[in-house]
Image (tube, rainbow, N blue to C red; front, top):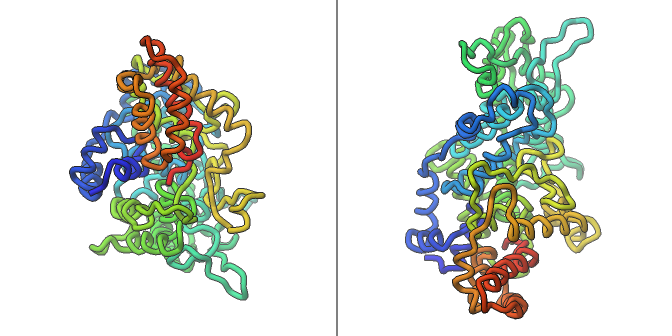
Length: 507
């Protein structure tokens, strides 16, 4: 069974933040049983229901800039007990990207609310089911312009190719043929491309004719259309034979059948296991997984042991329980990742029991100078906040070719902005949410003990004793003779740890 540090480390990988109760549970039941409990954990109130219940779906908000959506996302990430599911939602939102930044149409809040719920609903299902749900969602249809894409008309109009290209490049198979371990297949010393423009054109024809299901409103609210799968219009569907990635879609099939066959072809492509599996490893465990690690996860993607392909629960279990995921040896290049700013915020919010007066008015956190420089579901483009293959330039990682995606968000401005934001969270709170430092204040008379608790919850054993002692010495200079002094010690301990590289790099 794991010790305290091992349990805290695992819980930070598999969720957002460990509590002392979470650590005790994991130590009692073990890794596998904890994952079983998380897979069985009930979903909390949906984003859609919360937004509607709190009045954000009123006609007055028809054109609002996501009033209520930010609120519900932070609410779930900070308070929901099903941490693994919520962590998977964040990961999927950064792979199957729909960015709220690209929308200007009515009911944007409800569009994104429905998409966040869709990711949650499919987080523990199959990859194939997730892929179809994402493809037919009004959010994705609007973001990548599949919605309203019509057949060629012989007068110059062609099917929109945006989704056809990105569903291959970013969601399923990537740009080059992969071995099972994620390394590129080559010919003549050059990587073999997975598709060319002809495949994109053919795939786009298979995705024509889709639009909102307005008929399904049946007297309900106008915004109801945003959470129903799109429907196909035969009049706008491109008929005729299509060949995609070597598979033929017959001339006689209708739009829904053509879409399913195209998605079947993509989901069954041998690239998907290593391509998608590697990105999950990066999101949960480490930035630069070894080919052997990728291969083990890809093998589970291909077969969960019972003949099922793309079982996301089995894939997550493989990602989190792999020997390299549990490895903590110093100096191993495949061990560790920079915690992205949103993760750091949610972690400390849970650690200090950030509690809202009811509405979670934290808002968007994209500002780089005074906020996180990152806000869930608000990436700058379909390519996410950072690329999975990003290698920091002019660094030791450059020479080694070590991928470190989150470093794409790191610069002098964002470092300062993050610290400014965290200081505000810890002192005055953010929006209507305030921290509760009672557990820290109870230990504040002993600065070393207080910092040790904070370091365990944040760093999972990765913050060295020497660093903890330096922080405790600094915190100890604050007089703790009064309640205000103890509170200041608590805040200072968290703040110094949040600024500490040993914490920011999740090992």
